[in-house]
Image 1: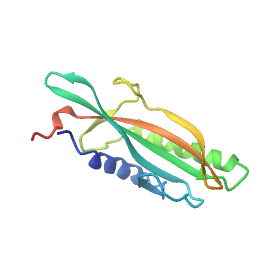
Image 2 (image 1 turned 180 degrees about the vertical axis):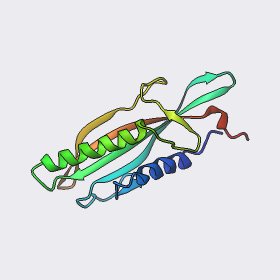
Image 3 (image 1 turned 90 degrees about the horizontal axis):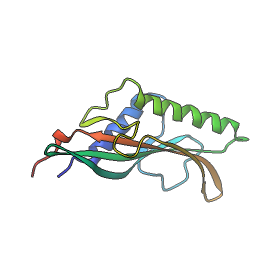
Length: 149
């Protein structure tokens, strides 16, 4: 049995909260439109085994970090705030960090397929338009940390 994705998601949540600049960080997408505040949501996108190393699997947990902000202005303030937060999030994971747990590193260059990507879009919740950014976060999990049944 592989490692628990629950724990890995909480490690990412804790790392983002520890940055001290994000006030609305959660696991799971919101069911209701976020109210004016910039919201960051962490969701699991998949688990892959792209390679075997000796007798152990290399596990990659693909997480998505979504950033949402409604347009409360002409668009410039929203765009700049979202860009600032996306930069801070990617820097937090690319810079000097320790995620802890069983995360070996983040696959920024796509060594095992998918790399870190940032995709910008728009999203409508009812009549409210949001600027939405999806950051793919492929986490390489230590293969030596597998649980044995």
